[in-house]
Length: 390
Image (cartoon, rainbow, N blue to C red):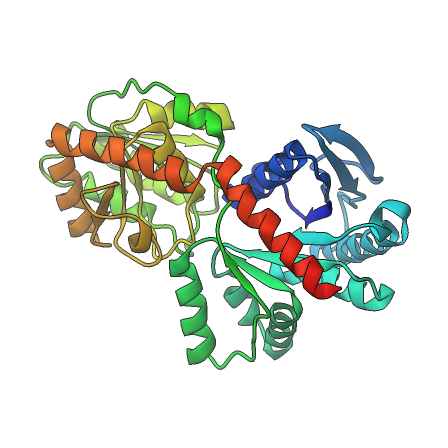
């Protein structure tokens, strides 16, 4: 099968990216490993004004030309880059490789999926388009103005299949669609995720004593580092060390908050962006992995921690609480300072509960997030969509 994966950002760019980008890379390489012809079209992180390509783990990665200038308005340069992306898509699809493309997989509603669908319309191509839906960014984009909402509605209604990464996220999508009056009628759906690297299941854990880790971007939207940081100020957690991995606009604020409190600052380590191997090492050496958030589609970091055998504790919010079973494959915390303080105090003094969740979490990840099994769901979906498209 001829497959194109298109995303402006990707794990091939050499720049810090999140779980969605690593998931698409894993999907591309797993499909290539099963004999499919896979092209990954993305932007490069280098300061290049021209495109280039190379083969990585069986995937032909094509880097889009990107304009990066030390002068000029950011909005103007961004608009030029979006135009260059669209032109690159058109050129790809009119080429010999592009004309053979049967499936295009994307993950951002605007601009990526929107651009792919417009290119298909302009060129009257017959490929099918699948969009990964991993969170609520599509909803955030739609709130900019009425024009953006219409573009989001058109895109989500014209893509051939929406790939929800969890059933809880799919339920949130349907609830928001109904409550906010979105004129969206998905043509087809798949609830699945490609999973995590199989190598994680083979790692040996050597956890440090009373050490907690959180891996997440520092942003005001959704992520709640503040709950875990403030929870550590409560009595009974004075000897717990917290490691925070990730960059973001609110990181400096919380670094200053901890620096102003010597008893707290000495126990909280801000790592910034870490390589994948460094994150794996940090998580596997921690007593507990935690994720405090207002919502999360399917945290790749959570599933990777499970695969490593590190017990997890996450906010008791959907969709997280649809697949984390409290006391079985992980733990849930009420999403407040008091809730996190109480939960951490309990878990830091319960080796038996942690060991139970460690074993069950690893088994859960291996059962539902092994890419060699999950890729079969994508193959069947692609084959069915192509057959229906004629």
